[in-house]
Image (tube, rainbow, N blue to C red; front, top):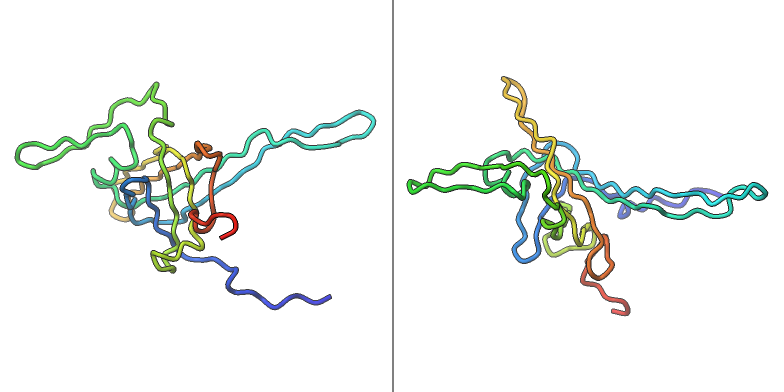
Length: 179
């Protein structure tokens, strides 16, 4: 039996644009390196002495998205460090204030994350990845000052199940059964 003809429409490639938020989605900015979506399933094998493995049970299914952002200005960092705040003086000068985060519930900062391939038009949602509820987990954020190099703010989003029991969607999330 020979190979089927290659279906190039099934091959995905290229950079993406990431937005976070539901009411007013915020564009997170340019990236350097791969934006990675990792879905990992951990299991526990059910075994008996007599039969060996008889089944397997999912014990965890973690979804994380890591985005290496090159925008490290104050406003961009305030978008990805949820407990940070920008203070504006009377003369319009600003500073970013980041307090300690110990004891913060990251789920309090959860919202929707959308990864959209830039090679598609904005209204083509066929290959979007929508994480319905996730929270930003900043770091590591490296501020390297060197003649050659670039500062990168890595942000990882950790997915949670939303109120409807949804975790993530690939494709247009507004599509309903039977449409």
